Length: 467
Image (cartoon, rainbow, N blue to C red; front, top):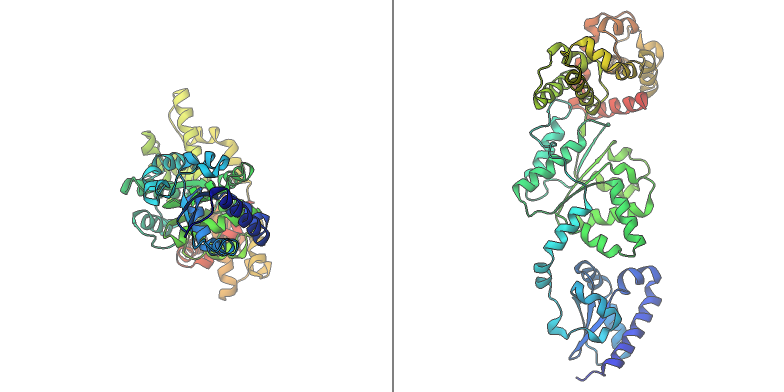
């Protein structure tokens, strides 16, 4: 079967493109079909050049049959359409002169493309993501009851060649260790297999990269690059709330990676169901895998973190000072470590020993902010509203669970969020003994580690009180 000469084929290609544009609309045409170029004629087959492997797969799945049908209706001698990925170097010359493309045997094959791609892909992936902090590893992460489940899940993902659950969704308040765990996962994955393609970045940077691709009209490269990774880690996903175009792209990237068996790790300050401003379909998919929350720190965990930090700094710090910091700075780990750094640097500069008096002087602004952050009365009011009980129940002798459990929650928060002593807290709850407060604190700590609903209640109340 003999096909017309190249000028006629190019004219037919122009007709086919016009018909396709009328059928699919300007947006789909510009995204998927405009970048296609006529490459050559091979017998009764027309070969079309495609910029990327990802685009080729999409066009084959969604448009190839229609292209062949339209072309056959114009020229019955055309029996088949072939789509081949063209070399990047040939793309510019092909746009200027489609007839200049090499004949079919010279068109790059998928295997040839795979051999040529890794070097440029690796550089692009490195530029795409954020730099990993070498300090943030599993070995330097202090484990305690509030975070042990999240750590176990992160280690499982990091050590598994295939996704054990997809995605892994980590959530918790500011400064509790989400970013540390994500960096630790990336370090472990690269340690076990240096060839795995890992990208870690914030949701804000994901949006920035997407907007830049839109402005440069290069969204296909963006899509292909993101969807080529083995492990995608997106931090602070709540940032894309309300940003519809970014959510759309994130949704398709997420689905593509899951379909290809690639691992995804996401972090946020709230659970998927509480991420207002995200589309329902995205919230649903974020909850597909394993959702692991990182609870606020306990006194014991804060003390352990400070001891580990002191060892890293190779500085001897009196236990009384560490205990003082653990009891007074309860907001988050980042603030806690920052306080210790300030004390150590001050001691080094003035050549004085570290003491509680020195810590109080150096950290007076931070301690004052922590002291005035919330009052017991504000805690009681927030708990009453959250559980829909009466304010009188905070001080009453009623012991029914519907009243006793919220009262214990309020005592726990009073211990966590205020500098008040156990006897002072007990006095605010109807003159209760300090042992009652201590029992309430331990009870809520235990329940929060076992019951996600209790942990979620605590997190919601803390956000309300501290926000």
